[in-house]
Image (cartoon, rainbow, N blue to C red; front, side, top):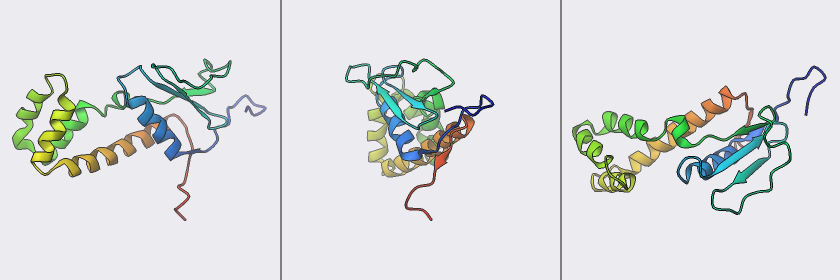
Length: 153
């Protein structure tokens, strides 16, 4: 939707919808899955690298009308987040974690290590908070308006 002066109208989007799209995109290696948010309707289109994608509108390439939901790596929520957590909560085993991440399957081994140290729940909490902060900051930078959660006054 365009105003007479050529300015796009950005409709409020539900944070939970954007978060769901973010998790869909981030559930696979970067560039495998995509999600496009249509700025003027808030509608999200899902594109899977494995098929079973939404049918895209003819104007889906219009970068003024659609915005691509980022992958967690694009928000620097991969290794940097692990390093932040380790330096704050478990600096004594940072070298061990660095060794784990030099090999394939590191993330599951990292979580197993945290579980044995009784820190897995703390990691999930930290990851969730930092992910929400980064995603909301991305929305703000993109000029997206987020509707307040329906359970909030």
